[in-house]
Every structure is written in C-alpha cells, then in structure tokens.
Image 1 (cartoon, protein in one colour):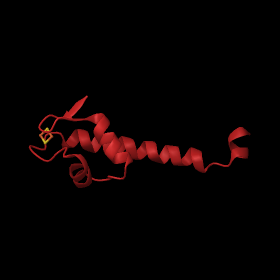
Image 2 (cartoon, helix red, strand yellow):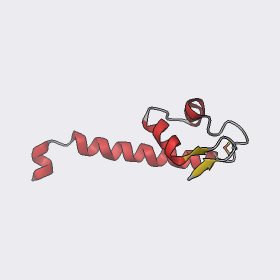
Image 3 (cartoon, rainbow, N blue to C red):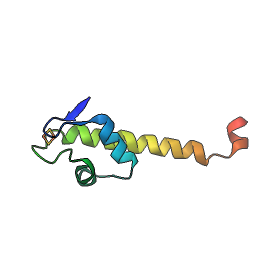
Length: 72
Ligand code: FES
C-alpha cells in the first residue's frame, strides 16, 4: 500500500526502515524519504511506528522467555 504519495513510498518500505532502527518521523524521513514533502502521510507513518514498535516488543517478550516457561 502506498503511504507517501509524494515520494512513492510503500508501507513495506517504511516498516523495513523502522525494523532497521528508525524510531521517529525524522529517522524514517532520513532513511527512505517518506514524509519529506507535504507531510500529509505523517499520521500513517506514526501509526506504522506504533505498530512496529509494539510488534518488536512482543517479539522481544517471546524471545526473552526461557524455553522451560514456554513449554510449561
Ligand atoms: S504524501 Fe508523504 S510527503 Fe506528501
């Protein structure tokens, strides 16, 4: 899905840069250009930042869990 129409940036690209370490609008903009023009896409970028951050935290919770607790 195209998120940033000005720069032709998809949600996949934005998710990838967030997973790669971008954790703010400015960092996403620097990494892929999304949000660097009219900024009408910034609410969607913020939503992706929230979603991806939550996903990363869930992933960390499951990977930090000891094997014995996961199988109990
Ligand atoms: S739609 Fe993203 S900067 Fe314009």
